[in-house]
Image (cartoon, helix red, strand yellow):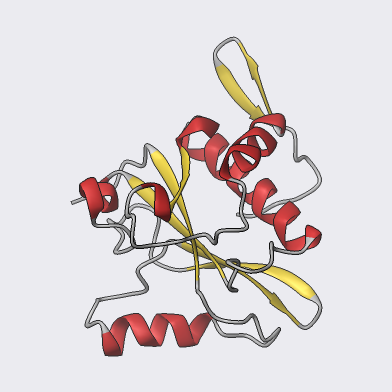
Length: 163
């Protein structure tokens, strides 16, 4: 079944971002521990060697394995920000890259910013993307990166390419 995303669901790894490359470890865990065919998320964001990287996980046209509640795997892209944000919010650089990347996804897949959610909004046992993420502010910040002209959303993040 091909995915036609209508939402974006933001997750966290609930691990400390050690600033070393850990995306392959997440993929390996999903495949070898969970028995999935690939990483459950479509994209990941993490700090590595003093840069913030956006990595590909599962292809965006494939159904994810990141939020079973309400059938959300079948209508959403999963984005995981490496780190644990229950006690501390993400630093400004990681937050800014996350906002810009989510705006790019909204543009590419014609997703409204109000359809950007945290995992916790669908599964009460989860805190993703962390209790210190203000999801209303996140949606507002994503929205501020977009403009609508003639019914088409255009991305205002012109100096950054994620594709």
